[in-house]
Length: 398
Image 1 (spheres, rainbow, N blue to C red):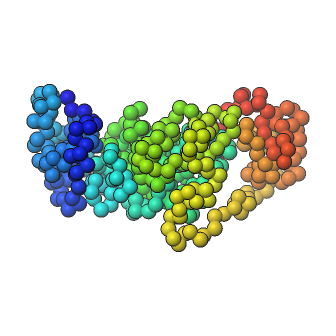
Image 2: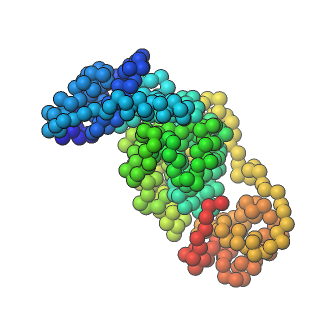
């Protein structure tokens, strides 16, 4: 039986050099070959290396299957592949084959690069330097703020932000980088928007950024598709930045893929008692670059372009503050303060700036919360939740 990866054929597979000058018939054959049963990226490369083109590989495929003990093997029917091409045209998507001039060069260097990608949006983003940002689906207030700031600053510095269109850190990074350039890699078909809550974001990315998928249209995402998506996320990027990740999470799978692909792995440190940061802390312990801001990322991998190298990054104090507004409902302000806080201490002045309230109003609420035993003040003007509040809270990312 044919297997996806066989050490005996890696030499032939690595010898395959795609020819971008192919006609429509050959492109149809490539799609049929990839969609044929038991043919994945490695088998595709092997067959293309052995036969030189997809038409020849398709003709030989039944004999190859028979030699492997699979009888009555039938390649993907031409009608099925044509239907996929029609669906792509109707959606306005472009099919990128491995070897096409528009296929991302860094991804093409990966041994398991998808032979075909469907692209919806601006494929020109694939020519720009890319960074991946991934993390938990249940981001804390600090994690959410860090993700937005990192994505916005790195986007301003000329990088395209790549992520997986998941809720949490992924969505926050896409939102923050939307104007500067962002790429969403989907699990499942391009026309299947998952999760549904990110449908509006997905439409915005198709208009202003780029969405990618290696799967046929109409395919619902399944568990096995997400690790496949993750290898594309890391393969596109110069580095993978992890912002909040539990000890066992898909974000750590992406980080492992990045190491296997020769990419830089970076992580934002977190409070030792916050389980959402345990994966990041482990990565840093094992050698990942510690990230405090965009300047740490650029120092590690270099600027996006020479022109951007001398552009200063915005300091935290330069981030526009929300205008002050009266808080007539003291309970509402108290709830917002508790929602913003976590086990990691936050500077009181920064917390009040984030909330857009005056020092007087904020100080009154913080004093009341401290008297009620909800928060604790720490040296240096820092505020944090008391442990009992940490375990009982169920905050959502703002």
